Length: 329
Image 1 (cartoon, rainbow, N blue to C red):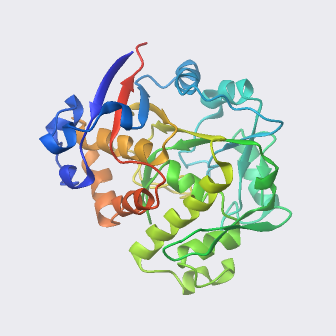
Image 2 (tube, one colour):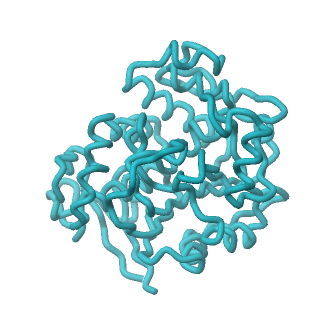
């Protein structure tokens, strides 16, 4: 494997809408380059998106998904037009870890806001045996020293799982700017009411009231980081993160009619650090020579999406500097 040390900070990359030439080669300013490589989290990368390579990046992490019940957190996708992960791609990994697909109901009207309709939609998308975790209720996890939230409201069945594989489709998002590992464990694991609690910065716990109480943008992003803190405190080391960067629409899989992807696929990335993982995906967008990246960069900028990474890092959930290890194929 070939190791490249990425030393850029959010400020250095600036999300200026143009490629930052130093990041791809691992060179940067003296202050950041002086950071010892062994103090930084590792992000593994493989270019070709195949079932075999998905297994390779999982195995590279060195953390085996163990326990009686392993949950594989996916986004089940809102419609036939949505860009959710293809089960033909991910099923070999799911079988390897003896995993169960896990999701929670949405907080908006659509194809997944009731358990019956959500399960039907998920099965249509190939997610056989999916556990809609808030089908039988919800539970509260404490948020220690949250910026806005004192708790995270999650699907009741989340507590049944011994290990969580967070398998995310990296793409844009119409509200958060981008969606990756952090969004998948915050909004994704939250129940319908929990989603409302996050979206409103703690104003309401009723999903019926979500759009009447939506929070200011940075408060929403910080509330997602609060929810991530609760999930990571609960799981400890019994969690890992994989992002698949394909079908890079500016819209999320929760959008039933997403914009057409403008940027080409760029690979699979994995880490034990969700902040580093999401940051590495964004860095690859910034440093791509693909002109289609401008649409995704604009979406991230216009929603101040990087602020979620800053809030998560401030919570001690990970780092935005990392070692990038390319897995040779």
